[in-house]
Image (cartoon, rainbow, N blue to C red; front, side):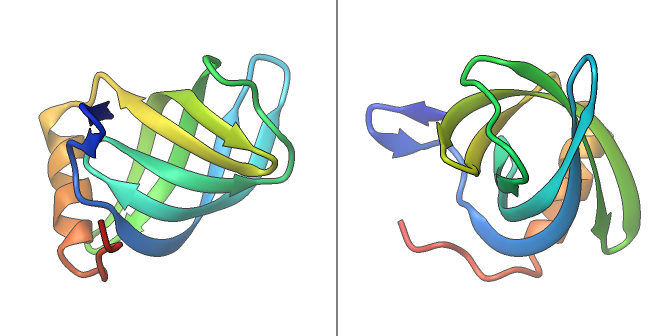
Length: 107
């Protein structure tokens, strides 16, 4: 999600419940930052960097349930950075629309 020290997408503050799926279990948490390319999440337990996971959450406006694939790009205790993999245009649009209603994170 980054190039030459800069992020490709502006990040936005949020507080959405999220479920992260692993092969043998699901981990509940909260998405605290979101962007068109990924999200930051506080999870109930650490997930290893490089792990491909399923992500399930609802953007509220308009209510849209998203079921996406992501990869863990960083893990610092319970805080994780996840990059979206292979977003469809409708999914990207739903995230973009939701982000317009949120405060941005200062660069």
